[in-house]
Image (cartoon, rainbow, N blue to C red; front, side, top):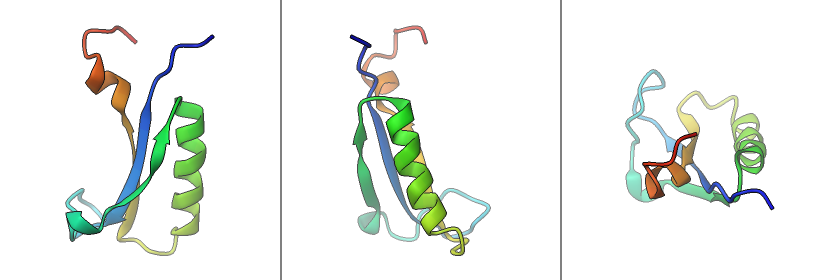
Length: 74
């Protein structure tokens, strides 16, 4: 069985499309937490594709496993 590597996908409206500051952190959308990068990427890709016409809307993938176990080597 492969090691579980949790990933978080979330997004929201940015102040400036060239930056990474959100308009309202209380309004962030949590897409979900996924057991591996491949599933997180599919979720991210779906949200990013659905909002491609909104330059201020941005989604990110966070490698939660790296935050939970920072000493592990990739």
